[in-house]
Image (cartoon, rainbow, N blue to C red; front, side, top):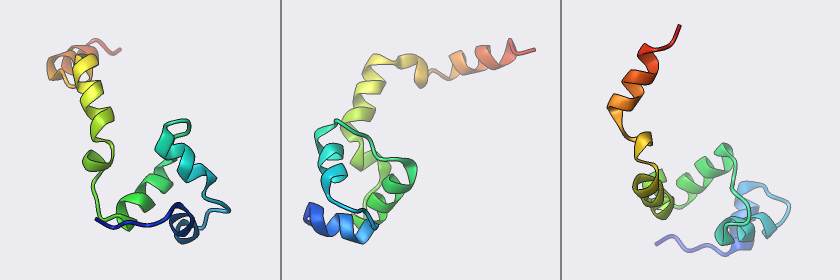
Length: 79
């Protein structure tokens, strides 16, 4: 796909160095929403594709996040 070096990606995103991109790739740091949006545009991808493993893990281990009846119950008990 759209292969960029960490250094070039950092430059395109206006970052001072590629250190944060390295941390994002290793999972020791998460990009903020603006940086995620820039990554999506730069790599012509979607959030689902970029965070596929994380989303699958959440779907498997946190079913309440996608349980619509849970959300309705929670909202209906609000004051």
